[in-house]
Image 1 (cartoon, helix red, strand yellow):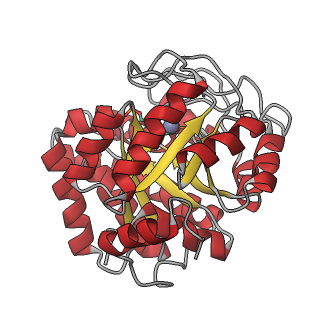
Image 2 (spheres, rainbow, N blue to C red):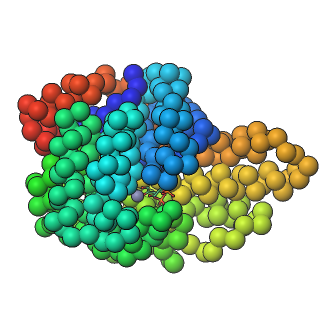
Image 3 (cartoon, rainbow, N blue to C red):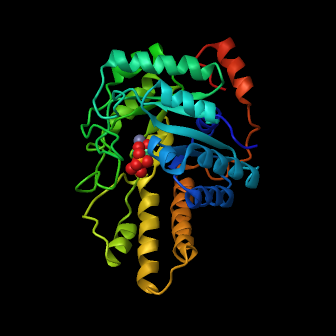
Length: 342
Ligand code: G3H
Ligand code: 13P
Ligand code: ZN
């Protein structure tokens, strides 16, 4: 295998009634942690890179890390996805680089900060759908905005997705997957108390799924911010304020209602930071980076494995043969943007 389109991964997830974790990467240890977790749980997986990650790691380094993952784990289907593309140019360069899936986040203008109009969102997303599907590449769009700001990305303003508009948006753009805003935000500080179903606006997912049963829904800002990971950071000199994330059982409820892609970044950041702080504190005389990066990688792997099991993707890596980008392009040409889900 193993680089496959996200459309195929999500179509298979829909058939099997499970969700697929989409984990962010910036470096070697994150790619290794995710791939080891995928192998140990026999899971298909989505690896995603933000614009910040591409800048940090350098496009060529990042791409070749993925080629290495493909070579080392040929039995694992992996989609390489552009997270939060801020415009058609970012998506185009990701496709040219070899990504098999892109997110055109037209919920914000190109600056990645200003909430955009519905018309702007439809226009840029449609443009990316035309360009990507011609090459067999999957497209995720976003309607509504999340709170929180990551690396300068995000408006900080929450605008929940309007289910009526979601139907219009999918009709007009032809996206394969739709990110919906249900009150989550990026980063560690999502909620000041444990969120219940109302705070999370799970009814939006249920409603959209009822009206768009074949559109794959995406939950961003889905880190659970486990207290035990925050506690390790704080025990070893960190300063993370009391905070709550998205409970895993709420994500599972979303998966029952059409959520197929679940974005997780912060939980890996927390796991790595806690492990590194602990390693530094325990042996202040150590200075070999392998001494602290190895436990960081292990801690990230443990989080990813737990999520893969909870989302239901575990055990599904060998269910299907990959469809090539070329064959996907033919399908889009023949069946239209809204493929008849396999
Ligand atoms: O969209 C949010 C992801 O956590 C990526 O964050 O832009 O800091 O790489 P980043
Ligand atoms: P978290 O910050 O909750 O991990 O969300 C990540 C995300 O949505 C990436 O697009
Ligand atoms: Zn996101």
